[in-house]
Image (tube, rainbow, N blue to C red; front, side, top):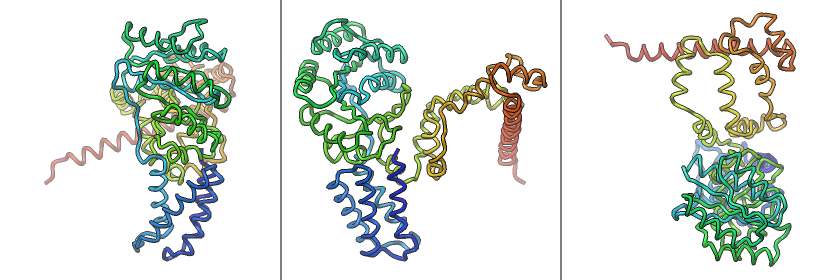
Length: 442
């Protein structure tokens, strides 16, 4: 995501490196390259020009501190302006009504139905809501079945009416059903088309009029670039939606939609989706996205993802086991499962400042843990809880059972032993530090 744009912006800032001060000439050269980079990322020309004009105006009006290099100052201005361009601050959805009705709109193939499942999961697990999914796409043959499968994955019921083909009646009946059965949130999936047409717009406008939704979210495939922005404008003119959802940000997206869309429709980007996992949905934070575009990482989002998987009681138990040198393969596999729940491994690594460029050309597969898991699951319960019993014969059996070779098994056990020793040393060091801190002073 944004890799090409980040590279080109980085090259643009090199024009200012080594310069002692900001001048008309060096800023003009740098911003010319910035504008090219934005246009290559499929940002609207007018928006790109207005953006670089604002950056230049602020840069020329600043007295650069002696402790700050001109390139650093320009990056700071660029960061603030990028964040402002994308909305300035995060915008969550409104859930005041009971039931809160959320209408999902967008073209076919934009990821609407998958987003419905992700949103239901988000509202259920992070907001404590009781959502009901509504299958309002009566045209695409697989849409209803797909929504049912997604509903099963996140344990959220799906309201359908079989062969009934009237989306307005389905939506109205679903809301009645929600009120009768205690659902406080209704998420209505709607039909999409391969292109914007009058019939499609009339239908979704009729659904809107009938159910009066509290939130209308427009789902757009970020890989379509500037076309996504144009489609958003047409939908907004007709529906006056509340916010935008950008999907497929893990794909080969140039970033133009994320940067341009707020300026065109004047509605915030509320969510971003990456990957097919139901947990792969995040609130859109303009400042954090600006960090990532400028290659600064996004450590705040990484910490938040880690905290979501963090169980304080389990952490205390684990700390005690480490202190007693009882950390075993059961604990090891548990930690791997928590990391996997955080999301795509390469995406997580790119959130660490300075790491994004280093791993750009590396193929970090989401199945990177597969062989490790296979080896551990091929162990007996005794072997997982007591690694000391893993002799040569046992290791050979584990290699055969896991479809790996003896070298891989030996390597994992060696890495595990080294990890356990390091964790024990860190725990002992922390204990000693606390003792020294709490020792009475003479």
